[in-house]
Length: 211
Image 1 (cartoon, rainbow, N blue to C red):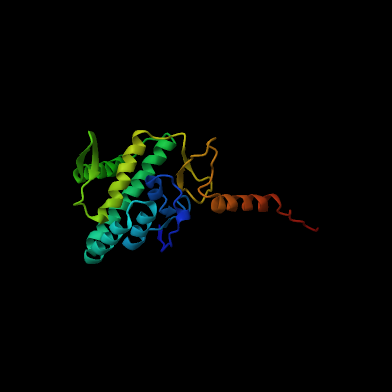
Image 2 (cartoon, rainbow, N blue to C red; image 1 turned 135 degrees about the vertical axis):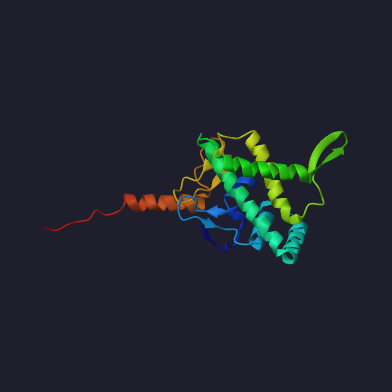
């Protein structure tokens, strides 16, 4: 897998869930994949764009990363491990295959981490679980993705999970169209490329051989 310094734009955030957005930080899953999270700085930009960090948290995480680069590298490596595990598990459920024990083990480890990091909040007779303020801002994106992942997996939207129809893409998204007919991660990118290829193939002139 090639590491690429990608310039994140809002158009890249198409998953409809932070879980799928994390999976989609690899481009071209099916052919010559590229890792779009080359370093902690890129990861924090992505996390901010996905709504996993606010501006204050992003700045705090960046400061922590600059003073503790080894800790930042460990966080990034761990989140990437979660990314691959989520991709594997979602792919297995989507295509009715057996889940890999290694994927389940990674996700379960993040579930335990989340449980340790949470505290109970009672507000007006409503009980909730929130991530403690003592948790490093560097850890927040992974923990928040885990919260979203546990919710997604508990009530898995099988009928709405889609993989982009482009053969060289592999991005996943929640199909929120009324008739569940969305095929592309982004019509303006993969959709138009596929249509252009189809048009060229259909209109290709046959070879004329002169004997």
